[in-house]
Amino acid sequence: MDNAKTEAHLNALDLLVEQHDTIEQLIAQLSDDRIADERKALLFRTLSDTIVAHAAAEEKIFYPAVLAKETDALVRESLHDHAAIKRELADLVMCELDDPRFAARLQILEAQLEHHARDQEEGVLFPRVRELMDDEELERLGAEMAALFEQLLSEQPALGVPRQVYRSATVHLV
Image 1 (cartoon, rainbow, N blue to C red):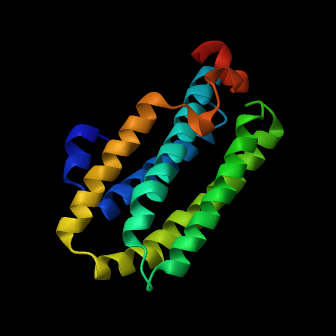
Image 2: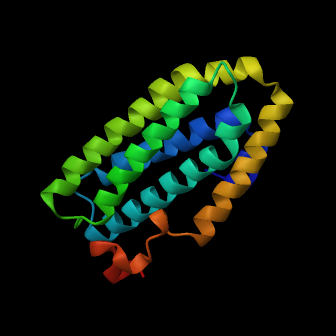
């Protein structure tokens, strides 16, 4: 994704869908058993950082901005989903990449993300938000979220965990 050009013109909802797509693509690549360990480690670190930055932008900017009577229950459910996803991601971070449990946990994370992103947000919350906010509001929100997302990706490792804690990934990537 060409962040400088693409995200500057995306409204908040389109930005989030694009990030959902990126996360889905990273998981698909990471699930390929044929990839080399170094590539797998890099993909996992990128996935972790992307999920954490995405969730932070939603929690700090998007959810507070769209919180209304019509969306209260949906935002609460999204926050609950984020907590479950972060727990699963933390378990993955502590797992060796070649551990058989890693693949199983990755499948669980994928299912959680699919439900949260596609079913709940894109299927229910986003249509409501489109009714509540105009294009200008959504574009302003998208710009704020893109800036925070990029800032977090550039300065913060996933889950606040130092890169040295990433098990198999750290030998080659730190």
